[in-house]
Image 1 (cartoon, each protein chain N blue to C red):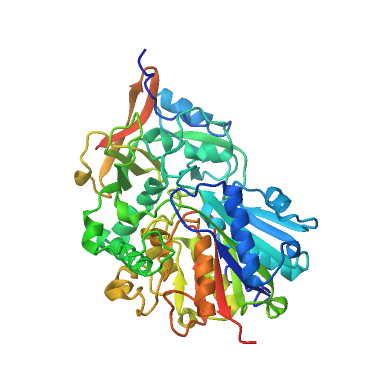
Image 2 (image 1 turned 60 degrees about the vertical axis):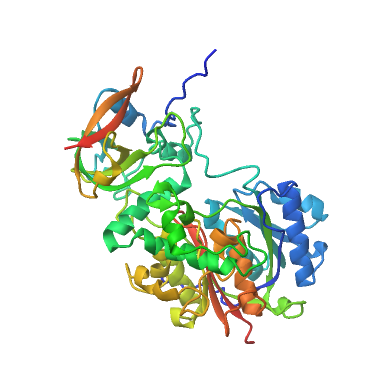
Length: 396
Length: 135
């Protein structure tokens, strides 16, 4: 069942991408950020606001579709949906858009993520000490919060330690991911860390956030917005940009799936839900890891980049630490990862900026362009129910 | 007027999980057990994922186990927790895992596989917490 081959292969395409600047204090509302990014994406695609008849966003986004649609002046939004699970939604929103288009319930679907995550609603400050309403999700936080396990970094660190124990990865191995991201960001003018690369020594000297995670293992916090326009491949061919085909899109959650605290199953040191996303992507697109020239790997925290490389079959289980050595995930390496600088280097927009980078790589317009890129993997949040995309150039 | 002292976060508790928290206050580490198939599960919930029975009972754990994973929390400092704060994932002898603290042990002396024993500490007046110590 996990090798499900869907009927979505190349049914839909990404026709437009848009974004605001990425900052630490945008100085305007999240709603305005969303609208700016959407206008920019529609302009990129050569479409009008009135063409939009579908919208998908993250349930963590504070801008519901009706509010966005009010300001777009839309009067016929026939498809709207929201995906839960934080950054796990990043590729899921595009998956939903592709399904809606394939099913004929909408023609032009906008997906977006807009947040003042640094200036307004920081995720890393810890959960509160007031008695929470006993929803199912709050109840799960309660297994960890009374002991001080209160932040995303701490939740990931627990799985990272087990991964280190089982496979021999070290803090330096995690650091190589940060070095690659920051090297790429250093030559991306849109990245927050433009012209600010780091060395492995910098990483090793950075302070503990939650041991085994250092400061430079943790992504930054950002203000900004990203929007993406999805339409049918047929329609996209008549628009302004060369279409970037959605070769495949997939979601998965697996057994005993929790929200970043998957400590109770037999898979603490792996990400089987991402492995099943990968299997679906390859089966649907009829491609293999050898067909992929670049990967946008969700990097809120570095250890999960290693595990994702394993789940996607770029290397064997436990061997990511060897795979990433020698600059193999840097520009010019065997598999450039996050050529835009990732969320550690460019911005933390809950993975949405990674989808834009996948599109730029396939249009051939990226600032750090991977030569001959024909297929790019994009992944979403890890340690949560998640999603992925396999994007490709239009060969039709 | 002094600032009120911050307490450790109070967990959300449902009808499915009340027994576990009550057990801690009675110095017992309980594990939920399916009455139909005997499957142990933690965190507790209403249905057995193996046989789908809604009937369950509890088993009192020996409190013995070993460190399955651990972290040392440094930043941001969040009262009332001291930093660094050693947080452990313990695999109990019975097979289920539970998150707790290992107070008073330097993090460089903690190892995966290290044997530990549960205890119950009154960290706030009238409120017991599950904690572990080296066995």
